[in-house]
Image (cartoon, rainbow, N blue to C red; front, top):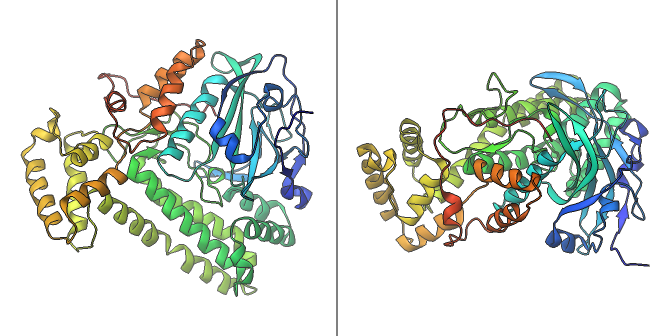
Length: 478
C-alpha cells in the first residue's frame, strides 16, 4: 500500500453533537488535480496527491468527516449559518506535532446548505488559493491552500462555471460565529465545553489562569489586533468581515470578495455586495472591535457568576482592542518608514503622509516601495511640493536615530513588500487558468512567495493596471 502520510485525529468530534453533523462529501464524476501545494504538503508530512482524495471521492484513513455548525452577524444581522459547502475531514498532526484542520470546500450539500448546492466554482477556488498563499508570503497569519481539483461537473451561479473543490488548511475553523451559535442555541455547559476546547487547542497556557475564559477573550483580542494591523499595513481589504469570518486562532479566513488596495483611500471598497461601505479599508479596525464585542457577549455566562461583574469584565477587556490595534499599526508604520525609536511627532508624520497620498491618489504599495528604493517616478505624488517637503521632514527624522541610514533602508525592505497580489495580476492568472493555462498562476505564486526580495523579476508585477473608468469589483464566490 502506498504511504500517504495521513496522520488524522478528530478532536472536534469529541464536542457535543450540537456543534456539528457527521457528513460525507458527495462524490464527483471526473476529479482532476489542477493545483497542488508541494511545499505545504511536505510541511504537513503528506505524500498524498491523488485527485480522488481531494475531491472527496475517497476518504483518507483516520478521517471522520463532519460539517460544523455556527452562526454569525452578516452585515450586522444575525443568521444561523454553518458549513454550507465545506466538510472537515479531520485534523492532521504534522511531523512537528502541530495540529491543523484539513477541510474540503465545495464537496456538496450539508445540513447547513440552506438551499444551496454545496459546490464551488473553479475561479473562486483558485482565487482563494492565490490570495491565501500571497498572504502567507507577506507574513500575515492565514489559512492556506493545499490543492484545487476540478470535478468534471458544472455549477450554475450567474453563469455556468466549472466545478472545483479547494482543500484548505487552518489552525482551526473555530469562529466568533461558533461561539455566537453556542450562546444562542446551546446550553451553558455546551458553551463551556466549546470554550475549554478552544483554550486547549489554541491557548493551553490559559488552563492554569485564574479565570480561563477572561484569558481566552484577552488572547483572541490580542491576536486580532495584531492581525488587523497587518492587513492595514499592506492595504488588504477582506471585504466581508462578518463575525463568522473571524477566527479564534487569529488567522485570516474566507477569501471571498477580498482585494488589495491600489490607490490609497480609506473608503476603498471592492465587494459588490458592500454597497454601504461597512467593510471599507478604513472601517476594518472598528469592525474588528465590533465583532470582538459580539465574541465577548457570547462568553458572558462563563466570565463570572455575577451578571453585572461579567458584563464589566467583558467591557473592560474589549476596551483594550483599539489601543492594542493602534500600537501594532503605529509600530508597523514606523518600520515601513525605517524608524527604530519613538518620537511623539511620529504620528503626525505618518498621518500627513497618508493625507498627501489620498489627495494625490497615490498607489499604496508603490509609495512605500519608492521610499524604500529612494526612487521617484512620474506619478502626481512625486511631483507634488508637499510630498517633497514631507520627505525632508522624514529624512530629518531618520537623522535623529542612532541607527544608520543603511539600517533604516534595510528595515524598510523587510517591512514594505515590493509586490502584492495585484488585482489585475490575479485576474490575469484566473482568466488563463480557466482556459487551461496554469503557467501564469504558477509564475505569480512564485514571485508572491518572497514579496520582500526586491528582485528584477518582481519589477513587472509592481506595475499598475491600465486606467479604467470602471471600478474594480469582487464577488462573494468562495
